[in-house]
Amino acid sequence: MFPKVNPITTKSWNNLKEIRESYGQTFPLKATLEATNWNQRLAQLELQDCTFDFSKNYLNEKIFQELLALAEECGLNAAMSALKAGEKINETENRAVLHTALRAKSGYNIELEGEDIRKAIDIQLSRIEEYCNALHAKNVKGIGGAQIDTIVNIGIGGSDLGPAFVNEALRDYNKGIQTYYVNNIDGDCLADVLHKVCPSKTLFVVVSKTFTTTETITNAQSAKQWFHEQGYLEEEVLAKHFIAVTTENGLPAVEEFGIHAAQTYFFWEWVSGRFSLWSAAGISIPLAIGFENYRALLDGAHVADTHFFEEKFDTNIPVIDALLTVWYINFWQCQTQAILPYSSRLKKLVDYLQQSFMESNGKSVDRNNEHVAYATAPIIFGGEGTNSQHSFFQLLHQGTLLIPTQFIAISERAHSSPVHHTILNQNCYAQLQALLEGQDHSHPQRFYAGDKPSTLIQLKQLTPTSIGILLGLYEHRVFAEGVIWNIFSFDQWGVELGKKLAKEKLMTN
Image (cartoon, rainbow, N blue to C red; front, top):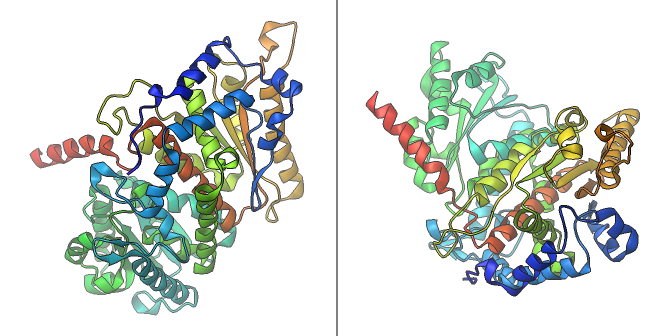
């Protein structure tokens, strides 16, 4: 197991503290960029068709080297090895964390609890591929022989946010399958979907690790009742219009619900919900876009994995991204980060990343079971450009808070008007320039301070591979941040109390 290092005890942390104290309220970003070109190596970090520009951040050579030293002192290399090897690094739940194995085509011949995980993963992938191919060949039929052309995914948290984001991002690859997501216990959420779908053509995908999640199972029971109210026989409905996704431990609850084991797809206890879209929990993705495109998504994430595990820290994209977060949160007292995708297709990305970052690293007790004396996860917010420019960008440019920003742009869009896409991207680049350069003005209300840090992520095209790379890199950033903060990133005990109290209130009413 990797070492449990309190970061504030390291030499590099204290060196960074001294460096930070040498500056005032702001960092002379523009002047630093004009005076030196050392950080141009951070302006064009490429991973296949994805380019990352970290150059417009509060960095110089000395700061960068101390941040890299911090990663070394906190044992990030050992932590990465433990993650890949399948060690039980999720200590509070006594689980390994192997989402990287889900998207690897080979390797990971690790035995956990007596099971060869490579073999187990391949079996589930083959079953998913077979079912998806049958659906897209129009061989999956509902009651009366109607062709299934609509998917309703019932899940919550990771069983919803990841698949919903990916299917929206890759809508151009959809195989003609209408896909809806029901996640909220508010009955309006399910009712709004049921008003739109035809029962004989709709497949309900019920996703729950235990198959006892209150919101998910309540919605699934209501969907089953919806069929009953229209005169359909329950046995036939469950045979043709429901599939389940769960763990082996959830199978008894699945069968009690009425779904047969043959219609059940499995993932494992070592798959955290936030990272589950790569498993059968993300089956709505290949059902919508086709298994070949889902495989490309997995391959893209594997590219990110290989980069993270093999690249040196000074050119390692998620490591650099994580170190910048630590630098801003712990030394510049930034409490927020804005993520700004300039693409309507990526409009659900921020929702997905909020769970990924804030549920993973929103912790105040470290791996030594001691309260931390430093800030951890930032508040993630954002929205799609250019709408957000007419919303909260005022705060970014002239507010009193220092908010590091990440912009995401798509270079080429075959499915969008060239005129629209040019205007969209020019707005993105203009915002980057405005945050950096600011504007002098004789009237104080029209003065822009500038010197605001930003990162640009550029995807050449919006493809399954590029989305896989992007999400994989963000996942590894989460992990690297957690290691440096010495916290457990893969549990979520903070959500349990509210669920427990809700169940108690239901039982007393």
